[in-house]
Length: 120
View: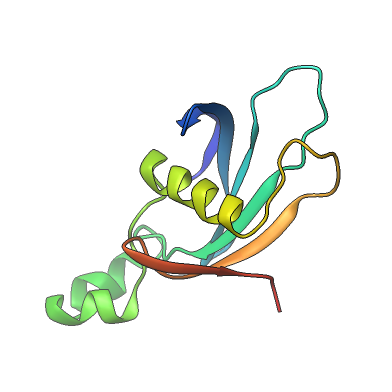
C-alpha cells in the first residue's frame, strides 16, 4: 500500500496530486493537494484503517473466509476512493486554495459508505 510518488487525480474539473503512506500496522494516510505549481495550497490528509494483507498473512490464511471482511479492512486506496475523499472533504468545507495547515480528517466506514470526522 506504500504509494510514495505523487499521482495525478482529476476531480470535477480540477487537478490534484495524491500520495498514500503507512502510519502504523493498521492505518494509512491519504494526502491530497491541488496541482498548482508555485502556490502554497492547503492539503487534505485523511487517515483510514488498512490491514496490510502481507502483515496479516498467517491470520488471513487461517481465518474463516466469511469472517475476514468483518475483522479486516483490506480494500486498498484507489484513485476512485481518493476522488470520493476529495468530494467529501469539499462538502465538509475544505478550502484547498486557501493557504494553511493540512485539514486532517479520519475516514469511518467502508468505500461504499463512509464519513469523515476530525481526529479525536
